[in-house]
Length: 112
Image (cartoon, rainbow, N blue to C red; front, side, top):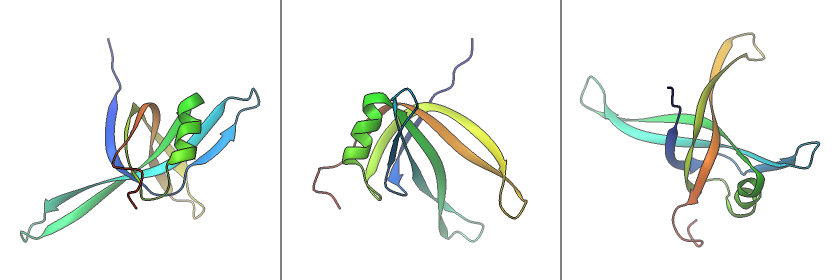
């Protein structure tokens, strides 16, 4: 048996982008950041930010594009995948990609 589930609570790095597949299925994508503070060797706190690319499908995709915006906090559950690619300068890169299965808004509608 194998299992792949990730839970993220963080903030949107950009506004959601909604598009539709050729079959008309809604797909929404955005970046999201999680941050944590850790002490470095000198005892100073440093903030460490991790970025994720999130994809939502169907009704959740439409809901996310309607109500989420850059900077808004959100709770995401889904499956994690590491994508490897080469950037424009020819350097190898990796990105953390999450196919979301659950999304919950955090905070009130009037936040930010």
